[in-house]
Image (cartoon, rainbow over the protein chains, first blue to last red):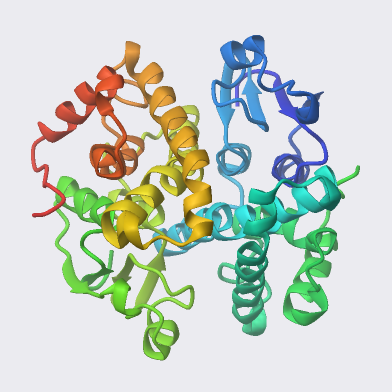
Length: 206
Length: 206
């Protein structure tokens, strides 16, 4: 890292919290800049031209350079720390869980949370309502897969906390806000508590 | 890499081709094992217990270890080659495009292609039909973003071919099979031709 680090974010987003949590765990200092996504503040011409042409947060700014995508940002912040295993198989396995998070976990659990908790169940259009059962089923399948993986281990990769855990944590711990019953996944619940007990841990609303 | 490399795949999948293309470009030899996803061959108890509990292909097997998620597999195969930039910002920017591919590109362009080209437009249920306009719009937005990014450069990251290009290539080049008009994105078309001209390039149906 070379310049001042700025996180362009919407604080209630788990993807943004993911980057703040990584920064806290590795001791990096972030300046935070808030955008109200409900008011379209990440779709303004200024934001698209200067921060992210994809119109999404979080974006991590290092000096005059900008990195979109939360998991890429976490990787950038944690480079060279124990959060990123160096053995090639463990490294690839960490990336596997990070890609899985964005493909199988976030579009189900985080999207349902956004719809139910941020937009509000009463305000959803028919297309969203029709997608809810499939997202409910896929979200539970994701939590079940995590629970089975954690049955015999403390962390997702090897014996150490890694970015796989950090990237899966934010939306899992608030899955209840999308009415997922975490009580059905006791290994996940223990893993959440284990992560909360880490030195330098910060909560989502910190 | 330590053992014999086996790719568990469905050859018509762009995600599987992505791994074969990476292997070809770095000179790695893969044994291919085909599963018919239309017949549920990746959801059998044997597959779930021994290959991937997530029931999806591709899976890359190295000896007795298994890596799910195509982009993680490409990273594993390309580790230590020029396809992965080592400068931290470029490396993070490469990961940004790889995560973006799985979140913004694949669920729109690849899913529409699967529905229209593999399942067949006449066979789609109402929920799929209702999602098509949003996926069409998001797919075109993804192609436009790529086209604008490529207006002033040959490759996605710096001046060199990287995994960002490899991972974006498979579903982009067959976007026409989902009735996307690539002619609207001339920089993308030139980039496709540039990639096809690389030494050791292999086509999807090779």
